[in-house]
Image (cartoon, rainbow, N blue to C red):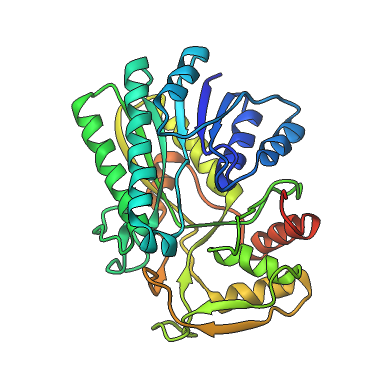
Length: 337
């Protein structure tokens, strides 16, 4: 099997991907600077798989640390999750986001090039489409990101396009995914944001468990059926299965391959709150506040291309997404901390 470098390995999606890779028989080397994550996530992965994961605490922009990883391990492919990811924060701190996300990726690509590793699965985002795309959104929709975060993702996509054009031996999968939620069914691995969550499901879960007093609904005046934003929520386990399918797809193909990962169904904020209340048996107090900069009204995927090319489809519904998220949060009220 293949040895995979997972950047952002202790993060929410990176840790679930590490678990899935190990269970598929691959070897994994993890890299994370632990800015927004905990090493305990990797410890949970090791317990669930009964396998040790070599781990380097380091920044993606540290070329010396990257060089040591590639010198000490025979890295055959990379799954790249590392990056800052909060839309609102990116509006307030754009320079930090461009430096971390774009410059970190350039350092990674330069190191991969110098070591002859040319297979990469990149964690992109549906935020690259912006507010102009009509849902369901297909991969050929125009890209007009409305936040610095979304722009960092689109810039990295363009860098990868140019790298594949310059060197036809590169095999790159760009996965634009929508809104990952849920947790591993064991309840031992889940989303553990630092501070007040930026994403809906962990915010709801922390209200349900008593860590936060109420859920703030950012805008109830969108042109949607109930006034709240509509998003395509995809279970993190379905999402990482898409990454494994993309990795296998690259074994037989060169160039850049672009796919949406989503369910193709949108749920409003109020609908997700209702689903979570059904799951946990508690009422979630809510309060409507103003819209957040960079947010859009409706976004859900056309994932038919991933079904055709990767033989992948999301399988898990919204109630199970909420149930798994609640299982994780109720067993770990304060996350890994």
